[in-house]
Image 1 (cartoon, rainbow, N blue to C red):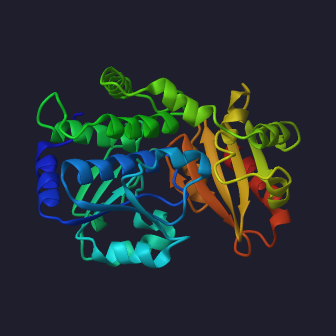
Image 2: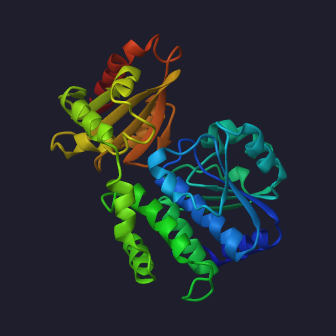
Length: 345
Ligand SMILES: [Mn+2]
């Protein structure tokens, strides 16, 4: 990994050596990469470096991703335990932010993380990182995932081919994060990504067991909801964009839980003429927007310009705010359609 500088690794080792209480944070609505990278970082700091570590998130992970959380690691989620979460942040003397380019992506944690006097390290693969707020930054957009970036950081930290602290448990968490962020090697895959996977599998990480947990452990409701959305809930515009709006009503009808629509936004891209796909999911006072695109069309530009968001060139996210962007939830489909026609036109 050429982008990882020896000098930065020396600094990272020093920051870890100088700290006692370490907080590891990731983005809101944590996905497999945020959970995998933070789990691996926490295990490494706790089991190998012997530090007092905990992971903090604004909200609890989706049930189907719960298997990523190691039992030995302490977690605090702001939605269920706000005081514990804030207290952990306030006591920390070192903070890691993973799979996240800015403290604002941690939502409820933002003010506390930003105000903390702790030293701060960013390890991330999103575009436009907020380098100002950190003492040390590892930022590489040309990589599959934060989990892969952390893998190479740990490999360089290990000083030798036998990475110190790279246990099966750490490796499994990292392979999980990389697998989910690449949609099982379908996008954002680089030569280094295959090398990482190859090395981890050779070292004993059980990829088959992992794939069972990630892709073949859903509830029946999810498959039926995905079928419904693809047949009744999909609009394809002649401009080459597609969108789906998952209202509260549909979520309730199919008893959709957090995380169960993972992957749905990718489906319209399997249609030859569709270059851009948007999924809007109603969530309280806003709609969460997921954007995916084929090479040559920028999901990132769409999310940044129209949906208060951003992310990666072909996979981004954002929001539609009820009240600010649209008067009512009913106006969301027309709002998205106008934006898409404008953007693609
Ligand atoms: Mn990621």
